[in-house]
Image (cartoon, rainbow, N blue to C red; front, side, top):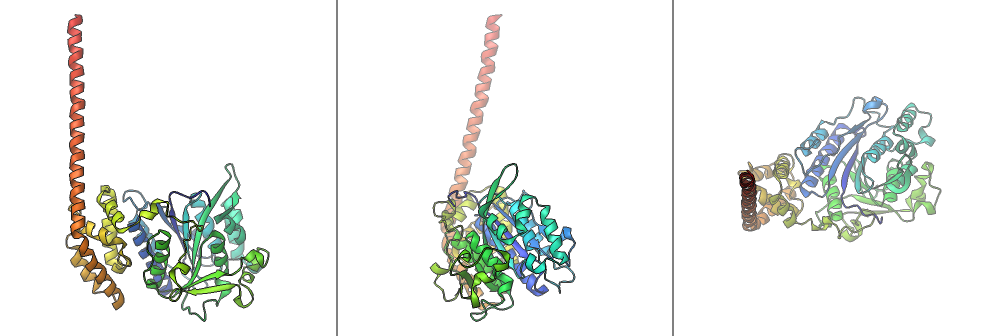
Length: 455
């Protein structure tokens, strides 16, 4: 990827039909935690969510739900970050979820492609059941419905009728035909969810997730097999994104498994939907499974965005000091976004903010901001800590909070300096305006004198 993007979007695509109600609720809640964290980090220009169902429990028009693009740095644009959280909270499994087959994941990815920019999108794809394929589902009505619906997406939809071609779109190797032929690129990080996964079972149920492995590999991303646990999903995802941002991703991720090909699929079989399982090799011998608990981080968390380092980009300045400084110097709109997000995190899951030291100074800046209603934030956080079930998470939050106290003097000075700079800016504006008024008055006087002289 030589045309490195200068801004990035985060697209979250989730299976909203498979699994039971408890599992879906867990996934939905974990994604809220992830959105909260990424809004505070401020490294994505836009964040959007697509939820997909199937063609047996939903009318065709309700198979896909799209949140719209949220600009997380603004509270006044719509949808706001609060709207995005509400969108996730309001998602429910439709009636008749016993039949979770015939998932509309092709349609969801076509929608994602339609909405995204030409380059710079990271897609988080949370999946449970496989897409529909012609060689398996051709005679079934749901498959025919999806193929028909995809035709309504124009050139994009026609490509996503075939999984291999859809993957090539995100890889940037298929050009979208039309008046202005363009290619689109995205990196897909897939999370294949199940009730339980272990070293012995990490490559089980290959039919369920092998299509998503191919999609991720084709786009320079990865596939992780993980469980329906809020803490696991949240920390795994945030750890990956922190690594991509160039920030320390060592946040104590619970057990999950990165699945990857040993040899590229094209070396084994023709690239067709029929061969997606075969790409994994006989008895999965073309796969490697890396346990997040035992694999060194430098082997596990590679930079996912097409293998390109982001060190040259603005993302590389994502440090605790930078995040706090961005808040202190930010607009009133931006400060409202961050203050509301932190209060929301404290209500929902205080441990999200304290997963990593990144937000220590930001927390102090919000607590000390005299223009916000943030009185007794520390006391409120301590109250929330008592409600956390995991003793390990409680210890982590308390340690994070204690470490944040060391920043109070530093942040107080930064706030005072900014207030002085703001006052100086106001003064200079007033002086400048007075000079303009004086120049206008002098001009009027000169014209008046000139008129008298002429008479």
